[in-house]
Length: 106
Length: 120
Length: 144
Image (cartoon, rainbow over all chains, first blue to last red; front, side):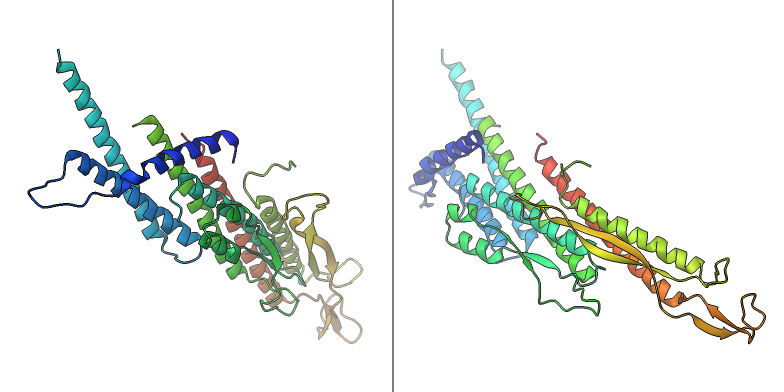
């Protein structure tokens, strides 16, 4: 792999590694201690990550000859992709909302 | 477990290398389906690859080298040729599908990275 | 012919297409001449193709597939299978006793050869389609 793209990929990997501690989902608790929005976001991120890892594991199982159900693997990849897209959309909406709110301060 | 983008891309890239090589070997077998005394060849790679994946050793995956081997096991017809057109075509189709699948996985991965970078 | 190959194996499969289509021509020629005689009264002798593995010069190449060249028609030979002798007194080339030698073409065998050649031709064609599909998938990586 060429140096430039290799660096780009390693950069992304490093970001993922930094996020790793935050990727553990916060467990749901009882009514008296509801999950904060921050926890909800954190759970979503870890769910996206889990789906991604699941798909990657399925891919390497296929290549290792351990499974041959390509359709399921393709579905897993799609699930991971859609979850990611959803998360991005939510993130974008949040950023928009934040910008609107900051405009109000005056 | 490959939970890093670059590792899956490099794994699938290796698979594409292997399937490209294997396609040429199988095409050569097929072209020689009627050549007297022609013994078919195939490509050995699966055990190396599976071992490297199980070891989760990235360098080992990079080092997987497909080996072209003569197939002295398949039965010969009276003219000494052991190519079966059906089997060869079947093998080529599976091989091609694995190649195409790998290309699409790589495409997905890169698209995901681009989306993450663009923040869209 | 260039050495550039974006579609893997397409050159190899095309040697198969060439060889099998030549074989079909030779078989068709045999069938057309199944009752033919030369001007000297010699019966037509059937012809056959001899296929051989085509090996490229791969000296110094690091590519393990460099020597794979597919197939070639080594030569076209005349069969020395004996002529069948039949009793046909009215035949222009019959001898004094009414016997004539027939060309050594067996129509059934030729049909079988033709089918085999046709099947192999189709198979190589399928292989060419696969090469193209693989090339297109790889090129799709460049979209976006």
